[in-house]
Image 1 (tube, rainbow, N blue to C red):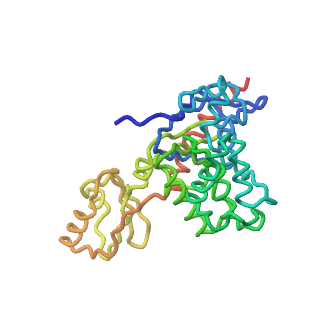
Image 2 (spheres, rainbow, N blue to C red; image 1 turned 120 degrees about the horizontal axis):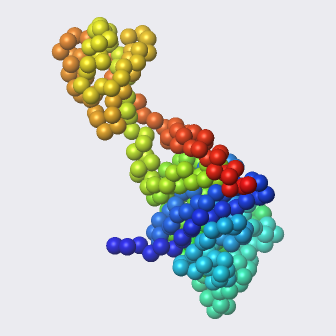
Length: 321
């Protein structure tokens, strides 16, 4: 079944004089998807989010929101967007209810529907019991919830969240992640972050931006697959000659780690551990260690961005000229 495309970005760029902050990015987001927009600080995430929401004009490219061109019909397109910037646009001297009523009015919700919209947003964001409290007196976690509530009060098709868990404690982070996953069931959600577990816990699709360029675009499951073990650490009490280890089934390379330990490298989809254990037992090698090595998501991220670092430099300079 084809899922409705709610966001379509084509060759989106932003130049600041000779500096290219965002360099020809392109992607789509469908209803029911949470897209993780991942990158180190300064990679161009916030600039991209500002262009996606119509708060910053692109130097080139186009954005469609629910089939509406954001530059040609900005009011219609923006009506379909809910946006939580990195610094939530909160009025600390207002109560939660006062602020959300104000947000409902500026989003042109009719008077007779404001109360229902307010109740729904508070219910979804866990704010039912704090409506009367001043925003300035709330914890950081609850202030983030209010920020998300203002973004969804008009029930937009697309929700854009820029660094929504920065500064929160672990419990608050878990609560916001649960909320984001729930929102992703009915909306298209774009989550901008530099925190890898954030993407891993909440997102279906992942894009990595580095130096203004998209260097990775795939599903979360495929990104996780890159952490699979491609090597084993082998420890033996009675080790054989090195050539016997090199001739073990499915082993591509053997590295001596010292102290009768070796790293055995194999192909990604192979699992030679059981066979190596059998051979070690048969030949009396005294197997004392046999453990797969996994890449962390951080290592995968560094590998992806490092591989693109050199090639990213040339096109950026050319476009800036």
